Amino acid sequence: MRNLFDLEVNQFREKTEEVGRWFGGWGDGTCGCFILPSPVDGAAMRAIASMGEGWDHVSVSRRSRPPNWLEMSFVKDLFFKPDETAMQLHVPRDDHINNAVNCLHLWRPQREAIPRPPAILVGVK
Image (cartoon, rainbow, N blue to C red; front, side):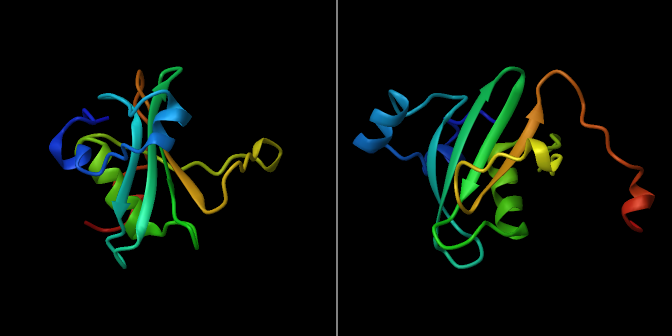
């Protein structure tokens, strides 16, 4: 994951009293709460970045609907380095957890590469 103090990301950091109470501060180079403009319609999206247990994680939500593909791609590019792969997971139904409405997640393991299919199975370059 990028250093979250990088100007490109840090300009969106949310530094309200409420965030300070929720998280005990405004975050650091590895975590924090951010309000981002949607690249689709400019509406606010909240992103919460964290790392722990060997994972980088960013949750992304909007008030009225879940973020779409373009919005998740925007967040991926903002929070992760260009050479990093991040993923959304569709876990088995019995493992599904939904603590926040309209929220999607990006994940990246820190100590191993995410397996990917050969490019030809995805499409022609």
